[in-house]
Length: 115
Length: 114
Image (cartoon, rainbow over all chains, first blue to last red; front, side, top):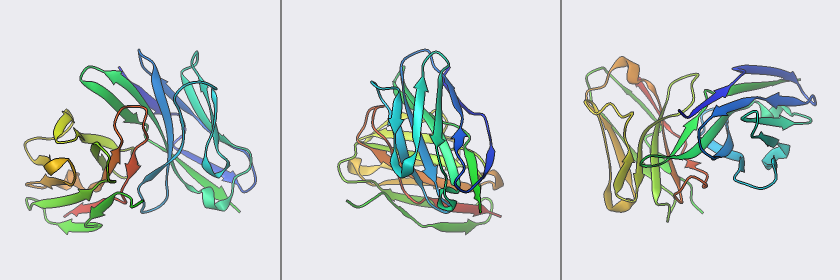
């Protein structure tokens, strides 16, 4: 069965420090992977996505993620965070099932950047 | 291009009352989604439309929730009667269709049931 696990519910980090938000998924078929960010009182917006090709994907705001098929992971990283990166981050996996495709979201990781 | 529009942004109702939410997707987007996001959780899909048709409504509590998408464009989600546990943010999203396309989200409607 398809599932997404975000291993950390909250990640506090100091400004200009690096950060990694972890995401693992399970699926029996090939998947497409996404990271979304949600700022307070707003909808989700796409940070980056992996469809195929290079396993290192670069997104907006200096974020990148690496797809690791053997470990079924898609961890999000940023080498130096800013206060403005404080938000909720969601990993999502989309695969093909009976009746069409399904997209499942993880529970989210709250990134809190401290000055 | 204009984003996904939702209204109202906030709604407070008493339990057993009814409520309706409206969504206008991005022009040309064939797929429309309604999600329920409870505080501290990820979005949970309630219903997915492809044009006018329902693709997935397996997690929609059909005894109280209903949704429609008229003419393959705007959509409404209704709850009747509401329960306390329905308090959540209801997100509408749209996409071009197919699993490779990202979803574009509206700002959501925050529902409080008292």
